[in-house]
Amino acid sequence: MFPYSSLLALCLAAATLVAAGPCDIYASGGTPCVAAHSTTRALYDAFSGSLYQVQRDSDSATTDIRPLSAGGVANAASQDSFCSGTTCLISIIYDQSGRGNHLTKAPPGGAASGTDPNGFDNLAAADAAPVTLNGQRAYGVFVAPGTGYRNNRPNGIATGDAAEGMYAVMDGTHFNGGCCFDYGNAETNSLDTGNGHMEAIYFGTGTGFGTGAGSGPWVLADLENGLFTSPNTSGVNPNNPTITSRFVTAVVKGQPGNQWAVRGGNGASGSLSTFYSGVRPNNGYNPMKKEGAIILGIGGDNSNWSQGTFYEGVMTTGYPSDATENSVQSNIVNARYAATGLVSGPGITVGSHVSLRATTSCCTTRYIAHTGATVNTQVVSASDSNALKLSASWNVVSGLANSACVSFESRDTPGSFIRHSNFQLRIDPNDNSKLFHEDATWCYRAGINGQGNTIRSFNYPAHYMRHFNALVYASANGGPNTFDTKTSFNDDVSFVVSTAFA
Ligand SMILES: *[C@@H]1O[C@H](CO)[C@@H](O)[C@H](O)[C@H]1NC(C)=O
Ligand SMILES: *[C@@H]1O[C@H](CO)[C@@H](O)[C@H](O)[C@H]1NC(C)=O
Image (cartoon, rainbow, N blue to C red):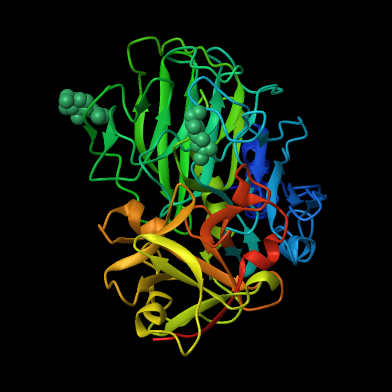
């Protein structure tokens, strides 16, 4: 006989599970979160505190972004209003677990240092990775190469061979092969201290160690001095598929007794698969020597060559069961992550021919043009030669790297496109590489100074098309180069887009 009270308990348990956030699910599985990071939503049902902090470039003021309600989606509108008329960066990703494991901009490390005066990495542009969750707009963390977050003074993250689990939801279409788009456990001194000193999720096409099937990207584990998907230090794990979904849920976990696992799935539908579960690689990975720092977007030694987008992730104490992780995946799917538009403001229509006029008071007769490969601004008017007019005229085509944005093809040099290289703009022939396509893709919004459009780099979205001393750059507001000066930034990045001269 089946007692009614058990049935009731079962129904209550099921109801609780449906309502619970990812960290409530981990807690009920006996493996609570010790770090919980998300710029898109609360990861506990009851969490109504600060999700992240944005810093505004105009006056360096900061504000915290909270969920719309306890357990809910981030209040993106509060960010939009705070950042209106300027640009903003994500300065802190708060830990929702109560342990204070917040992520801030990563310090220099053994492999690389950033370009700020203290060698710290860059912060992510605050509005570069828009998505919707159940129809409500929110922003992810868009990691361009050079961007990184870290906490080297963690509280309660696994050390040594202690058990832990972690998951992250990422953009399955934003990746590269550079080291290392990671989220998870790393060295506390930002140096490579040897095999087994890390246990982090990696997402990308990094090769050189074990890979998954096909050409990637894959969910792998960065265990330090190696990206792994099995004990093999090279070769293919056929059970680890190339990810093709827009959203990906990535899972890594490990526990004493020489056991770890890599799992993954579509972050918008379906269930998780186990890509590997079993013993660890041989050379120094058993027992593990985890140090317990937390990284996002970089390698353990601050390797800074990777790109990717992070929406949410947690680290647990204890080795979560597959069943617990499967419930977390259901919760993620129910959050209904969906892509949303990357452009706004006056349209720059694919198929049109345009000229782009500067709006800074010095320069309102200057247009974006080119001389040879160099993109510059030149004074152009209707009475000028056809050659000059053509050099300031551009075909708008669908973005080479992302059709949500646009690319600008030279009218007098068909097949060559405006791209950035070392943050300076040039026209170069399309070599059909992934990097060229990304360097030549631009996403627009309404002009920050109220005129025309402001046009940002697709792959370095904290960088905006800017004229400066008659040349044109991909400029970061207040960044390290002279062409990044905050002086007249808003005017220098706002262009009036009109029908092409020629
Ligand atoms: C990455 O690190 C290198 C080496 O320290 C540094 O030169 C470079 O500026 C960094 N890249 C970015 C985009 O910050
Ligand atoms: C490990 O490598 C062996 C030998 O190449 C191969 O047969 C096996 O499929 C690999 N296993 C995994 C899980 O990658």
